[in-house]
Every structure is written in C-alpha cells, then in structure tokens.
Length: 83
Image (cartoon, rainbow, N blue to C red; front, side, top):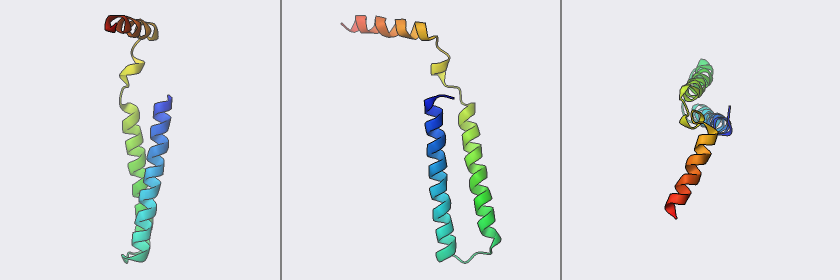
C-alpha cells in the first residue's frame, strides 16, 4: 500500500463519516423515521465505504508497473531534450 492509497482511504473514511453524521442529523431533527432506519443508514454507509475502497484497490496504478531505473532514465533523457 503506497501513500496515495492510504490518503484515499483516510479521505474516504472522513467523507463517509461526515455524510453519516449529516444523515443522522437530518433523521433526528427534521425527518421522522422508525428507530431501525438509523441502523440501516449506518450499515448502508459502511457497505458503500467498503465497496468504494475495494473498487479503488482493484484499479491498477500504472506507475507501479514501470521499472524505477527505466523511469529515472526516461526522466533524465526528457530533460536533455528540452534544453
């Protein structure tokens, strides 16, 4: 797991926590719902968060597929061509 994946996971978790809290506020203050709706809302948020996280982890990051030595060589040769 690289830094980009960890940042995505933490950001996703924070975003879904905020969405969950806003939903709880709406259900608690303005919309009258049955008590089990809060449980379904929580389970729904967890399932969506896990689905997005798994989907993101399945995407192949092409930067990992390139050999670091070749990437360094390519960067150096591109700099020379620009001059």
